[in-house]
Image (cartoon, rainbow, N blue to C red; front, side):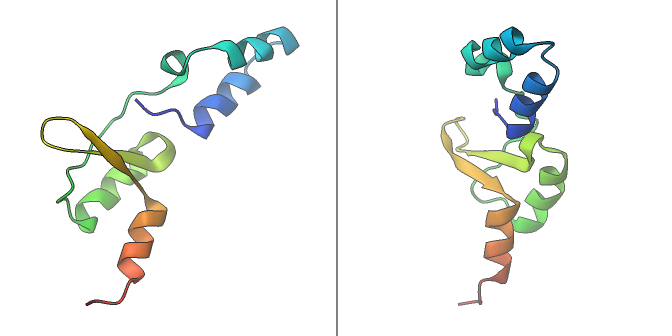
Length: 88
């Protein structure tokens, strides 16, 4: 899953009082994170990842090997940087 700023903000904003907000800080990542809607293989092209990013929690996508091993994350910043890089 993915722990996003949005998920943290929502948990804090919807807390009814200071005690509940303090309780949010004690929750585990597993209880706060959102499931990853998508994953990307390293060979996925930018044109394939862009539509996925629009719907992804936090607008980031985990990049994984075929066996599911986590490699990293890709988001709009990485995508734009790559698209703006001069061709070699």
